[in-house]
Image 1 (cartoon, rainbow, N blue to C red):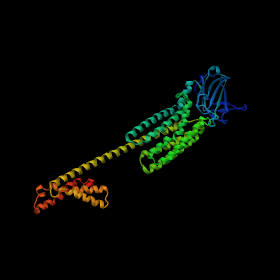
Image 2: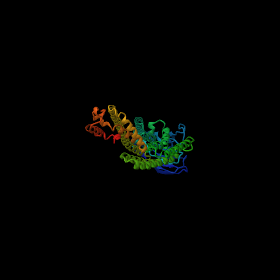
Image 3: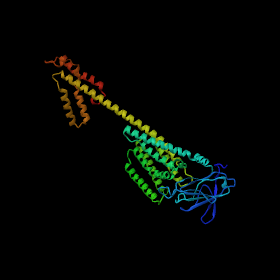
Image 4: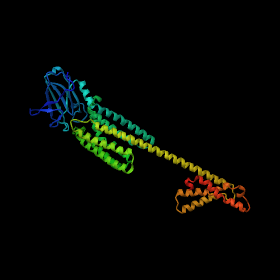
Length: 467
């Protein structure tokens, strides 16, 4: 029995002029879009594998064993729009009876991006082939699902924080970036045909995610910078939407597939990343010195490099299936979690300080009211100076106002005026209300009320109204 270790490494390319060229696999050869590339090889006399498989790269595929059309793949009658069939693995069943027969594979695509692309041809049992593919590309699919779950969790968590603290957190917009990135990774996954029955819809959604991904990135950057470049980001968002609309019209009209208009979307995405990275560098250097913000910059830079690698790799035979972007997204998620925790700590500290300030202000207000009430009570027992403190406070306020003092300063001088005779609490009532002339000893005792008042008020020297 042949195992999956058996690959067909070279085949013959039957050209349109009747000649044959021996070619190695995988490879990329010159052929015009819309023309069929015919590959052929002769199965060995001891051949006994049960399947052949090849990955279609936006190609219609036909498998012939001998003169028999064994397998045919085309989404022409099932896809909603576009010119090409979605990429996927195509399996051709075989038996030991096919030993010695000619295997012929016809590949047809209508885009120059993958015209002439020939991927590896596997032979073995279908289960063995899938096991080999899974071993090679399963990890990127797991990463995609993890990022999708983390993205949805980030959106929910960001929304909950927004509801709790009544402010927008960048975590929510990062979540949308992650969901779109994960959808793109799943769309590019080599095993996506196992995940969804219609590979064409997922492939199209993959391109849509690339075109629209700058939008949550702009929202993310805007939330971090508190709207500093909001007007510019809004115009860039319009450009992103315009590109999406134009590309979709061309796709639905079968003029150009998404893969053919993809370079424009990739350029916009990379430009947005560079612009956001520069803006965040400027913002963090000027307004923030938090270590978590510098980690955020590192994460963005890593994702930018990963996007550049993925954008270049999409035009080659061996695609990376989003593994680099996945790693970059995970790093960015971790840095953003650290930044969100730091921001929550700052918000809690600010809220706690505000509560302390309010409590302190209320305590000062109550203390001042008590002292003013005490002053009024003291004056009530002195029939000669009743209402004196109130009048002094009014006159002091008028003088302060004419001098151009602030409202707070006027309020402070009024409070001091109310309390200027509070020391009379230490003077006996019979002296305060004596109808006749005071003796020298009594007058000396009366004059002590200023010292008594000082002793009372100095205990509250931190009170801003009494300074």
